[in-house]
Image (cartoon, rainbow, N blue to C red; front, side, top):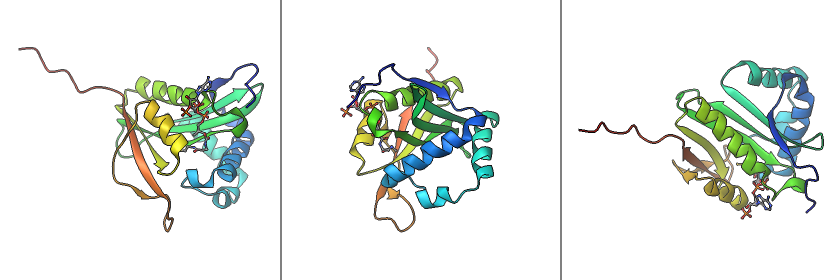
Length: 180
Ligand SMILES: CC(C)(COP(=O)(O)OP(=O)(O)OC[C@H]1O[C@@H](n2cnc3c(N)ncnc32)[C@H](O)[C@@H]1OP(=O)(O)O)[C@@H](O)C(=O)NCCC(=O)NCCS
């Protein structure tokens, strides 16, 4: 595997770069169809305005953080953190993907670190995600970062034979008891 010559950076996407976000997200769905609940066909069908609105929301909603991994001016990975709609103490992580040529060099680990940092900064108590049970590389990545399985396994998408497991990383310990 080629080393990333000049290293890589993790940064938030800007709203204007939705075409590049669209391109890497579609590349991810084509590369790893079993890793995501959504599909290439579903997202290819989205109108440009939808992509633009999705990424614009990530910069204005206050509850989203779309993260890009970049090396030598090229996008090589992404992940999307979002506050849970029902429980503000939880941040969900979606869309984690690293380009095949950049894998095994800590890019996903760095995306994860950044998501943890953002979630912790918001006072979230846990980071949660869903991962396909057979996706050993991803499960190992999350376990190494301290995630544990949480919740029941469910089909990746309706009708799919692939099962998805929920994983959870606790970010803040329980409140310390008062000393007597
Ligand atoms: C799962 C995935 C995101 C991992 O991305 P990655 O950037 O290769 O992950 P990392 O480099 O952080 O960690 C992977 C391995 O590289 C090793 N590694 C990390 N930093 C390293 C470095 N600087 N040098 C060498 N190896 C390194 C890690 O120890 C790990 O080794 P392991 O085989 O023992 O697990 C990537 O394979 C992928 O995009 N897969 C398809 C999509 C997918 O499954 N997404 C997850 C959806 S839940």
